Length: 173
Image (cartoon, rainbow, N blue to C red; front, side, top):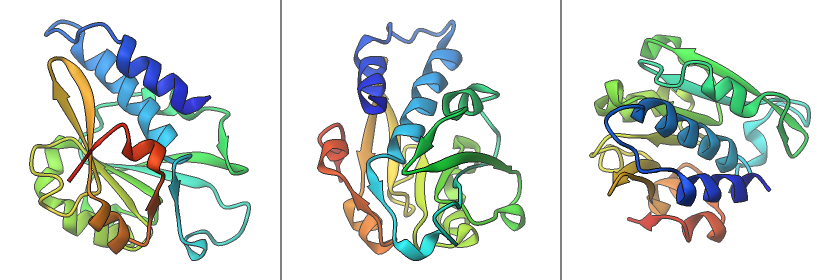
């Protein structure tokens, strides 16, 4: 159901204009971050045990506010609850399974992924050269609609398997 909600948001979202762009854009991105957890397979050694949470980290300026927290509130994936952590500096990054790299930090994605643990970290960004800098999933905006670019090579290097259902929604690069 979660991916259906994200797809509905993606296709039914009103055109994102200059006014109100941030709220709608980041509501959709938050829904996608939640759904990525359902359509990506992590190596078993990424979690300490079966009760370890699914950690979503936000590196750099946080564009979500409380939107991301609300998107995952009281939700689980494979029995794991979600925990949101925010990191301002590279030295602050802790282990997480999904690391959203804010546009404010796009050039430091490789360092951010290494600081988060490298293998088993789904790096997600929103800057034009994110994939070129080693990112796995990049949000794009085309004709006022949010899209995805996915690097299957970078995912494989991080020991992640991305579902074909998610790949069908994206431009594979």
